[in-house]
Image 1 (cartoon, rainbow, N blue to C red):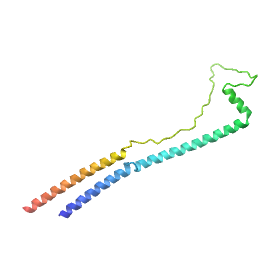
Image 2: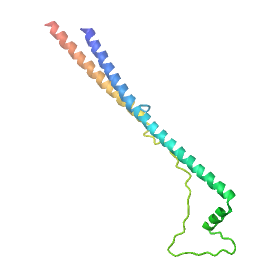
Image 3: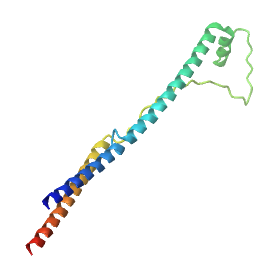
Image 4: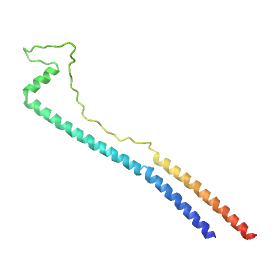
Length: 153
């Protein structure tokens, strides 16, 4: 019967190992959840690059207009308070002056969880392994004692 207890112990250790491996696979630093987070971050980066490319094209077009169209330069100069000689300035009360601000783009940075998450999972898995191993060891030892006590009678 000693081989039966060893088989049970090996099966229990394998089950604990399998459970620990599944926990690490899903929740570890390079597990499935972390991979999904990276995929989400990647899609945010792609969207950010697309926005930046559109903004770059808009700025190129505006630069081209500024280099070629003198009327565009005159309008922009008036917006910042520069007027040609002989121009009259009319200000309307209650009308706010508009100013256009540029935003270059958003800088995305990956939000990381706690740096020691991997160590926590490893420690928890090790504690679970030790507890379950001890439990199976003690229960198999008690079973052997009962078996030996039954054989002595």
